[in-house]
Image 1 (tube, protein in one colour):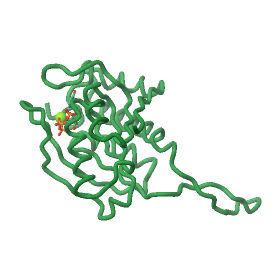
Image 2 (image 1 turned 180 degrees about the vertical axis):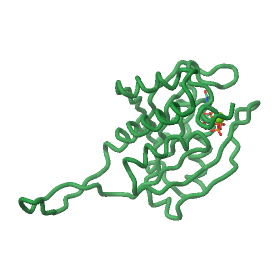
Image 3 (image 1 turned 45 degrees about the vertical axis):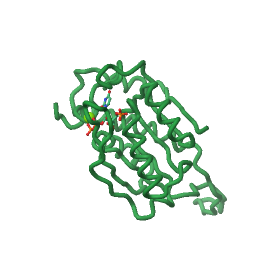
Image 4 (image 1 turned 135 degrees about the horizontal axis):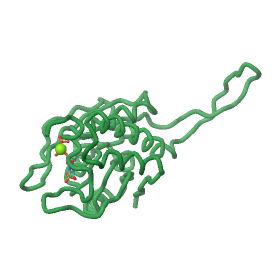
Length: 212
Ligand SMILES: O=P(O)(O)OC[C@H]1O[C@H](OP(=O)(O)OP(=O)(O)O)[C@H](O)[C@@H]1O
Ligand SMILES: O=c1cc[nH]c(=O)[nH]1
Ligand SMILES: [Mg+2]
């Protein structure tokens, strides 16, 4: 079974409280979401492999470390996942970005895909699928299924990174993708009757883009 980690660094908890507040403006929401995404990216990349490289400092030749292994890709689940891309890119600027568009049917809570565009070599990369909200898990499962089944990305080469998760979503995602690591900033209490995370932060997409 892959890893499930709540990244509960004090800075993340503090920043999350700022954007949970319903009075946070769209500007603040976007800025702080990206800051949290950067902090999550720092933790998520902790176990990247390293290799030795010989360099010359102003003083002497020296063998030092640099990141080795697979190239990386970031795949935001549109729309809300877009709010995490800049934060990730600030730490892994060489990553390519793919996009997958999903919306939740408000009645059935099923995920409906409306767009997909990925780097041509996505099956050779480690893929960070990012979306602030993991509620029922339907959107994340649909995105990962698409990457696995249509684009041949192996489960062990995918990581899901979210901000706020409900236990229902974590369980569903782990059942469907036991070999995909999951990192979130908070594990909340439950889903309400409309499939929203409680206490949560509301509709992340609407709060980022000011659509409600
Ligand atoms: O785990 P689930 O039950 O699938 O819910 C989570 C999904 O719901 C939200 O997207 P939404 O459908 O609101 O689309 P948006 O990002 O365009 O607002 C959110 O960003 C996730 O993608
Ligand atoms: O609480 C939730 C659940 C799904 N999508 C959101 O944006 N928020
Ligand atoms: Mg939304």
